[in-house]
Length: 110
Image 1: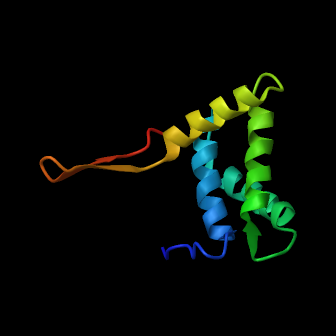
Image 2 (image 1 turned 90 degrees about the horizontal axis):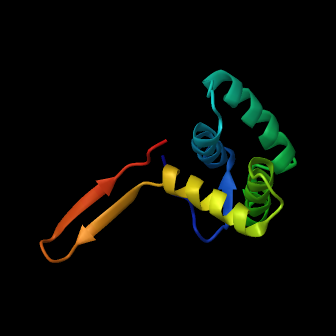
């Protein structure tokens, strides 16, 4: 997979799909790949408005929408907490220890 051009401030449909699949694996009680693929295809058509990429602003709105749907209350602190918990469960982390020049990889617990 190629690296994203960080100067563009956009994400492609492939990047969107990979991110949303990880998020849905955390949120959905039953994750069915074929159903998620179909749903994400339709969501991409709506979110991208026919464009090949979406902006980070649109991505922020999508994440807000997810937080709103999956939170119990309409409360910004709850939205932040929910998104942080999802982020922690989908993010790969590499930690470097300069004392002994080692690294440890921590994979998400989806």
